[in-house]
Every structure is written in structure tokens, then in C-alpha cells.
Length: 343
Image (tube, rainbow, N blue to C red; front, side, top):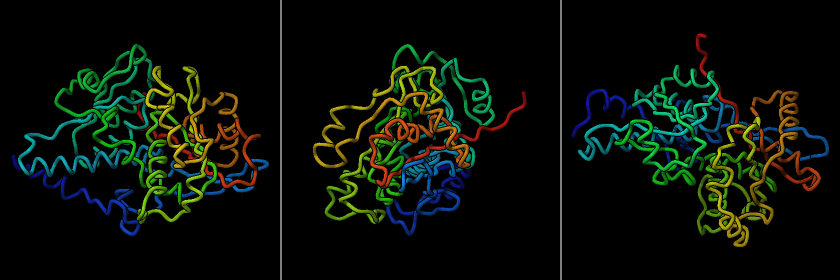
């Protein structure tokens, strides 16, 4: 079935640069550049070589904008498939979200006039976030997310999208290798000896370590990589998460997280094989250090929320165990810019 005139116009608007050429980056969509966000000095007493990756500079304020762009690239592939007669219509996407991912994805779906995102939220979601999602253009469905982990089939049923696709847990979209591959290279090119990363779904943490593995093993290196293999193989990657339902870092919490997707055998294998440092692991961050991280960020003018600054909180939690002159990169995944709405 051929494309409608409107679909032809949409397809023409989606310009994808190279998948791995730093001279022709594909992101951000309106002004591609590599790196897409800055890495700047961070000042914490006692540490001499501390840096922060500022993902708050993205379109809607978080690293989820990078994932959103990959969804647009997926739609480009779907449009081409429809043009070839494989699809009869353009499917909608569904996702479980607490706000950040849905805002980022719907922002680009609206910009490219693609089908609205169907968002499954917990019925306890902050009304302010609910209304913001609604105003952004999302189609919202509520349920109790605390009862059990949901399969893709169940997510599609609950969002009245049985013929669509689920973003939440679909490995077909390659979330652990594709959503944040450019970001992973931007981080690793800083040659960190320690890297602190918020861990919610785990996609970002897994992307970074999968890129590290690829470069450590590679006979020919990705052109985006300009770091040191020896430093990468010894870098300790600390994931910061929570199992506290009342935590300020609420975007890192799920009744079925932490470690719902995180496999201790997986990280043990990566450590043993020399793909990362021997201290690499995911840890529960304590609330007192989240408070300290928020205060420190505010003093230094860093835009972020508790979940996005969980890596900084974890550094503070482990600061007595980290060599003070080590090269350390904190990933600030940012703070969502919610759409204002009328009360």
C-alpha cells in the first residue's frame, strides 16, 4: 500500500545522518552535532578531576530525547515499509512511563505529525505530570503498576493498541545498544576511570557497557570512539538506583525494580572478561545523599532532579572509597521540562 501525500511529506522531513560518523551525526534532529551535550567541571570538596555530563541540555531536558529520536528513526523505517506495501497503515506506539520518556517521545511525534503515543501510567501519578502529558498530546491510560510486571502484549491491551508496538520492553528496538549509543561514546571519550550513572530501566547503563565491550573487543574501532581502550577496560561503572517507593528519585523506582532487567551474572561476566572495571556494579543510593546531591547541584547552577542526579548522590555515598585524583564522570540525565497547563 503506497504512502498518502501526508505520509510522503513526513518521510521527507525525517533526515537521518550517519549511524556512526561523528562528522555526520544524526542527533539532535534539528541541529545535529557530536557531542550533542557538554561535559563540564563539577566541584565537590576533595575531588580534583570531576566532570558532569549535562543531558539537561536536550530538547525536553533529559537523555530520553535521544531515545525519542530513535523512535522517529523507527517510524522512518515503518514509512518505507508501508511504501513498499508491507504495511497497510502506520501503527501507534505504547509505553509505560512516569513522565520523562513520554514527554520526549510525544514532543517529536507531534513535530513530525506521527501517531500519538499511548502512555500507560500508574493511577497514583502526580496530577501535574498527568495533565502535562495530556497537553503534550499523549493518549493516557491508567492502571495499578504495582501488582505485577507487564508483558508487551498486556501493555498493548491496556493502551487499546493491540495492533501497535510496545516501546517499554521490546528487544526488537535494540534499547540496550541503540537508544544511547551516541551518548555512550560521548561519555567514554572523556576517558573516565569512574563513571556514575542513574539506573532506572537500565538501558543507559547497559548501552554504555555494551559500547565499552564493543571497543575493548574490536579489531577496528567505531569512528565515534576517540578514547583509550586501556582506560575503558578499567573504568568502574557505578549504577545508582533505589528500591524505596518514597524516594525523591521516583523515576528510578518501580515495584519490579531495581534489578528487574539487571542480571548479576551479566555484570559478573563483563567484569571477569575485562570489558569494564572490577568495581562496576549497580547500587542502592541512600536518600540522605540524594538530598546532598540536589543541594550541591543547586549551588553550582546545575539543572537536574533527584533521579537525574542519582549518580552524583552515589559518588557522595562512596566518596571515601574513590581515589580523589581519579578522572570521574557523573552522568546527569536531566530534568523534564513539563508542558504548562491551565489549572
